[in-house]
Picture 1 (cartoon, rainbow, N blue to C red):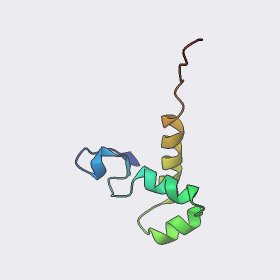
Picture 2 (cartoon, rainbow, N blue to C red):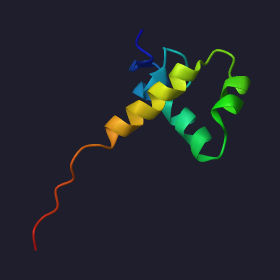
Picture 3 (cartoon, rainbow, N blue to C red):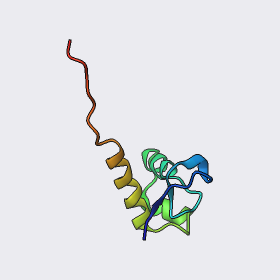
Length: 72
């Protein structure tokens, strides 16, 4: 099952969880804001713990690219 989906017609083409209108960004912001995984799962019955893990993995891959800096 693909947990992270991207549909240009949904949420402005931003990555979402399993085709729902819950964006990867929403999960990350809740975690960054101090919510625990248990709190998120309690607030969103349709989410599974593997969805949150997939959001974190997606974010890790998204920022793992090299940044080239011009030599001075």
